[in-house]
Amino acid sequence: MDIQTRSLSPTPAMSLRPTVPQPRLTRPHVAHGTSVDAKVLVRNLDFYYGQRQALFRVSLTVRTHSVTSFIGPSGCGKSTLLRCLNRMNDLVEGARAVGRVELDGVDIYDPAIDVTDLRKRVGMVFQKSNPFPKSIYDNVAYGPRLHGTKDKRSLDELVQHSLQGAGLWDEVKDRLMQSALGLSGGQQQRLCIARALAVQPEVILMDEPCSALDPIATGKIEELIYTLKDTYTVVIVTHNMQQAARVSDQCGFFLMGELVEFGDTKTIFTTPHDKRTEDYITGRFG
Ligand SMILES: Nc1ncnc2c1ncn2[C@@H]1O[C@H](COP(=O)(O)OP(=O)(O)OP(=O)(O)O)[C@@H](O)[C@H]1O
Image 1 (cartoon, rainbow, N blue to C red):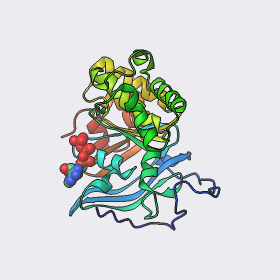
Image 2 (image 1 turned 90 degrees about the horizontal axis):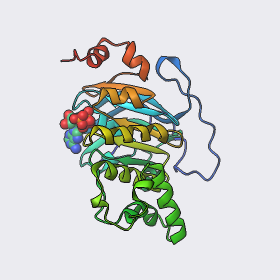
Image 3 (image 1 turned 90 degrees about the vertical axis):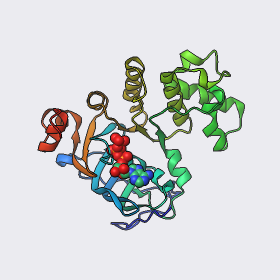
């Protein structure tokens, strides 16, 4: 692992969970001059896999309690950027980030950051559902147990709350001790969302969460994403432009590692500023 960062402004804190009150976030400048509450701020981010550069000077602001989507053709860097937001790319040999990514105003690439704590606060749901070969209950309780919750009653409450949050409780409440592998694909993906919710994150990253699902299961996840933003901040990578249009408040269009355009989803899909965005969303791209 060779994650190296260059802070572009002074490091504001050495811990993601400061014991002293944090200064109120300044309201950052985002696309088209809108001022918003920033949850995640990306500034001039370059990203390399070894010698190969995958992201070029990416800057954007993810608003708190919103859904942000990343769209663009295969290989344009969407997943790479998503994985930069909770340092999942640290696990890739030779990977290197240069620039700044902030969570609530704190540089997440600061060497003093506790990456386990970061990934607890910024959870992830993957393209292919990946339940553990354990009971439904144990899948959801796994994260809280790992983080030290042992009390049965607290775990029971967390499991129920998380399954409710993922819209799965009614379907599984009578079979919690049965294997998660017996669930349908869509249910397994919602179980993975419940598992992510169980550690009480603030941001949820979703990498093409519906790509392996049928339209009905996809619809349920999309409805869920819409409700999740009341409590969480959601960032989703999707190949499905209709999905981006349906679920997201802001949208970024990527091409060959460059963020071509970022702004309100409605604007991106109706009156994009860049010809390349227009070509992509109207299917003329390539
Ligand atoms: N682990 C890795 N090692 C080396 N190169 C990688 C790695 N992961 C991705 N890349 C390269 O980085 C570039 C961006 O890939 P990334 O997966 O971020 O794109 P994407 O837009 O998410 O693509 P897709 O929509 O196909 O998933 C591609 O050229 C890809 O080959």
